[in-house]
Every structure is written in C-alpha cells, then in structure tokens.
Image (cartoon, rainbow, N blue to C red; front, side, top):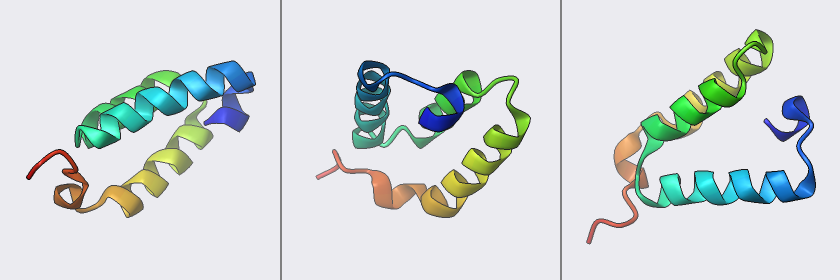
Length: 68
C-alpha cells in the first residue's frame, strides 16, 4: 500500500497505527474496507493486496487478540 500510494514516513506511521488498532480489535473486514478505500482506482495493486490479505487472514478467528 505504501509504495503504491507513495506515502511519506509520517503518513506510513499513521496508516500503520490505524491498521494495527483494527487488527488488535479483530476487525479484519474493516482492514479490507480501509485497503479498498485507500487503493481505489489502482485496480492491480488493490487486487494484489486483497489476495495477500485473504491468504493471510483467511481464518479470522485466530486474529481475535482481545478475547480472553
């Protein structure tokens, strides 16, 4: 995402924090929506990012960090 959007270091940190917070909360779908929003208009990069995310986050239940 960073390379495609050519984000500054400050923007990269901000986006990383946002994604990390969503991940910590188990909000995998929200991460997908964020990626779709950020990469709108960059179809090839969007397809690649979503494919990688699907492979990594395929089983959402293992990303429920806040659950006891």
